[in-house]
Image (cartoon, rainbow, N blue to C red; front, side):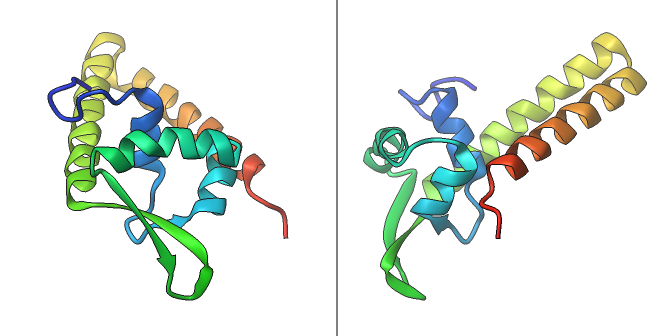
Length: 123
């Protein structure tokens, strides 16, 4: 994704934006699913906060916890990111063929899902 949509943000910032559910999530949960320490998460979140892409607020269900959620600007950037990724996937499908791309994409989604589940806390 180009800097025109989100100047100064890198891939890790885009991944974090994309990982945020629409309603937001607790900071601790975001650290767990992202695989970042709380300190690394705070450092990664800072440019997103400074740029107005996310906001951090008290969790209405537990005032001790904090929620991170995308702002309207963050939603626009995340939508632009998804559109850019969609275009890239179309290019890859054209390059290797739709059937081969479908298999590759399925495997990648499975690996991603497994990675996220591995980082989820067991209860």
